[in-house]
Length: 408
Ligand SMILES: Cc1cc2nc3c(=O)[nH]c(=O)nc-3n(C[C@H](O)[C@H](O)[C@H](O)COP(=O)(O)OP(=O)(O)OC[C@H]3O[C@@H](n4cnc5c(N)ncnc54)[C@H](O)[C@@H]3O)c2cc1C
Image 1 (cartoon, helix red, strand yellow):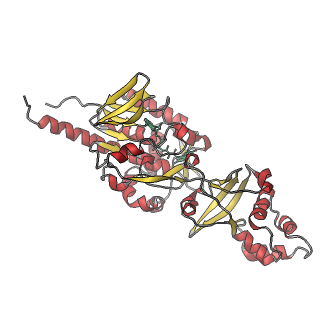
Image 2: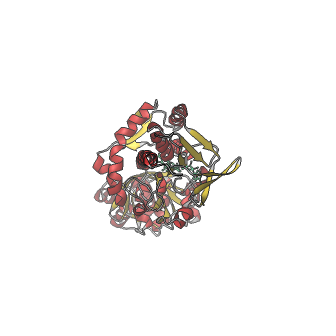
């Protein structure tokens, strides 16, 4: 006789955890999701504030390459739930999507809230037991301990998916508190580092009027990597979409060079600078010959004072301005993290080798990718993969237990 399935547990109601829960519900398991915060998926909602970039519509080879060292093990996982599947999934949850000129895919509503609302409604209708303000606080023996509004609770589920996120924007829920608990159980962890983050710069007082100003249409270069986009000058340094694809290389110590005129070649810039009267200062030439706006000009003066007078040297400077970067911004300010549960600690099903029956998904795993939809794609895909495998494992355990001869 086959007994009733005991509930599966998911810890963390972000996109990875909700996708794992969705998958296990679909496999017929009752599912409890324990979430520390008073409401689910706060980081997903925050991601939607500046336009929810769900995924990127580009050839699979190019897409998967953005995960660098993690690409080989993520490839089979994302091949089963990648950009086309995510677009369909969003549409099935009532969200019309569109692809921008860069290939980035967004819901038409741009925000995450309509998608999340519809997803949660669907999960609730299928019986999801979502327990808010349930904070996992570690292990007691084999049991999982929770701080809940009703006091301490111990759970000993047949199968668990951990989806607690990384360690950035901790006020939204993912604080990395789980790291020592898993390490103590023998799970190999790669230390966390900020990813997709800004960098500190010790600006002089001259930069103050430009704090908050974007510097658009740049080519950014670090090591062998380049990106096109903008940076924003902040009181503490720089941040912005053009910088994030290079953040990993910069974190490893490569210098940052800016091409302030990516659509003009150096010869043309030199000719325009040389056409100005010789008595004119370099600053005036930049302003008059090239119409440098205030923020661009301030950046040039800050990074390269005293400016050369020779038009050839000045043109070369504009094509490769070295920015005196300080350290990366603290991890709590980063869009995402590098590090987390090491791949060697997991089997192909994303089950922790040291803790059979416990699976993991999302940003708490050790992979890193730039912004552009790669982050949510990997979270949703690993959530689905871990959820499917966890359901299989749970069902196999149940059959195994039912096949055992009765004792006593
Ligand atoms: C400002 C910003 C903008 C972003 N924009 C984009 C974007 O446009 N596109 C994109 O692809 N990505 C974007 N991201 C990244 C993306 O939001 C994350 O990668 C993704 O949310 C991670 O999903 P996750 O489920 O792994 O973790 P999370 O979303 O962090 O969810 C983890 C959940 O676990 C809960 N939790 C943590 N600890 C415990 C505990 N002890 N007990 C119980 N529950 C716990 C947390 O409260 C949280 O709800 C953005 C991130 C930020 C900060």
